[in-house]
Length: 306
Image (tube, rainbow, N blue to C red; front, side, top):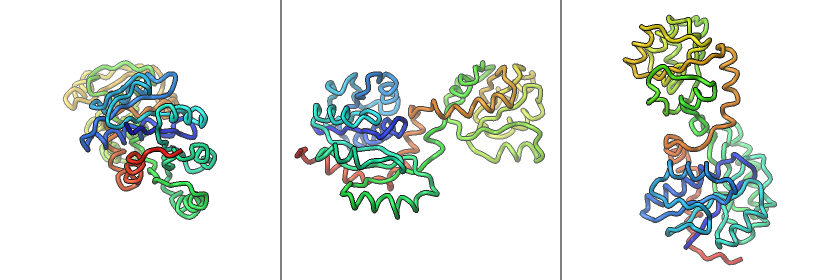
């Protein structure tokens, strides 16, 4: 059974995302796919796999993976540990990295098991550096380059529920719609423009607004927002609650003020996980022309020679 280990140069570089992407692609081809994680504490990763690619066989350890192809999420920044797992599984290795990471060392250590490196979270303004410096350096070193996945807001988005939990909020209505992804946060302060125009400026947005400003809240509810956070611990007035109910907009109430709640969200991205089907759908969309999947397929079709 062909096996592929997804390693990374450091944490939070996209191992879970890329493993789920490959699994979904292989499932579409009619193959049976097994998924596992090599990490000691892998419960969150396994739950993410079950949510994202439910048709794959998710195993509790790499040694128990079953399928036509097995994909194992490796370790972060542990070259020796990843090589050990790959040798036990007789697996090939793809290395996930960011543009400034050192990849020559791991590539050399992985030897004939190494398929290539995938750059993740590539900022748009650094594509020139990728093409004129990074890729030529890899080619000179004989390191295969498999592609670069661009930085994308949706891949690090949080849900309305996750935002509420991060702010210790309590829902006052439509909590059942709180699992939608939020790409933008809009502040309902002293708006100079017409409120409806302001809140319509971004799609997939949540609004943070003082609980005692029903005028701003009503303007926000006149637009297709994904949720609303009322601050200062103030519950929505009856007519605001009615409008939110009519629009099926989840409203959460937090004790913090608007400024403090907004500041607290700055650390939200640090806890974001790749565990939402909407994220996988977006990754499939942006990675299709960005990654050389044919090279990965070819590697999996060949026996490991070293």
